[in-house]
Length: 446
Image (cartoon, rainbow, N blue to C red; front, top):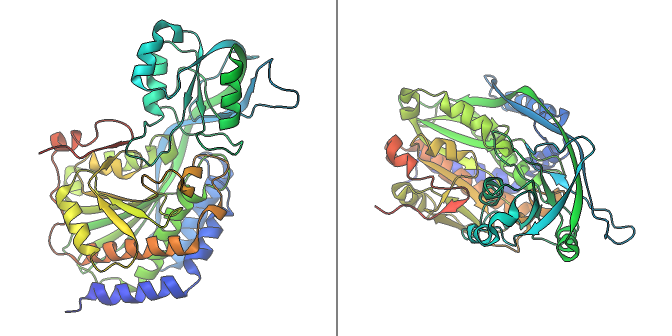
């Protein structure tokens, strides 16, 4: 028996595959630049989103402002006296890196390989006062160590600087953030080639990082599409900020383009579904999920209880394979599998917990939340180019982006039409057990 959701989904699927809207929107976003928080590129993206949401028939689109600790890098230089002639090291600061003394400083290096806990234990006190060199890992593997699980032990063991080496060849540095509270030591990312050179040479490096910090304000964008009334709320989200390099195409022009196109296609169905839809675009995600955290933390318990689902889109293309991560909500995973049973695209459903995108702040409040992610456990996929200057639009294939949008639309429409809870809202105590550490973790037992 056909439902209103089935009818809407057929219409949306046809337009996604036949129309140019999604692909054009993706490139429009990339053309705005990397959208680093606090830059004109980020401000231009906020203006673009507000304009596009209103043009889509969502005139109530609004900005939700919040304060955060602003930061920018004025200088980032690294040198080694033994580097071959003409070889210039190309470091890139990690967000919230501390500054060196004016004029820089010289440091002995300490190679800690992977930078796992056992590597720090083995190195012992030899880390103190040195610049530690550790490997970055593919961000989207259940077996990888998140950079913060390498950075925090460096601080705890008294390192004077943190050098993170890209795992992918190509002479481009890796980036990321340190901690939302700020780093007590300078922290920079390097290319695989620069890191291998420093490891081979050993000895001392000269590091000069100068930064500027000041209170700042930013805005999330929120648009509403009411249902028939009396239902709950579905929140579709994506972060619109990026890192200060490349086009931030994978991370996260892909998610923004899908969210914006679904908002446009659903806007003509106002009042048709059981539940209300809100479309949220967060910023400062790359700075420790600050935009979504500010918003979710401000919600009352009554407002939290009204949210049936957060569907978060972050790096949804870069591979033909994408995964619906259900973050320890076994009941939600079962519902998503049912919603996807007729989906032709290659997608998987996982109960693994991931706290490295905006949905994590909903999970922390006990709200059922799903992240759609491309390239899980595919280390050779193009998704590995994110967090680098190589995160550009050529890494995204139109067919992959369209497939992800179609699968997202299927789950979203089914959620909007459901008169029953999709999953049980967790208590704060239960939610606390779902986020044990940075990166990915298996679902808790019991």
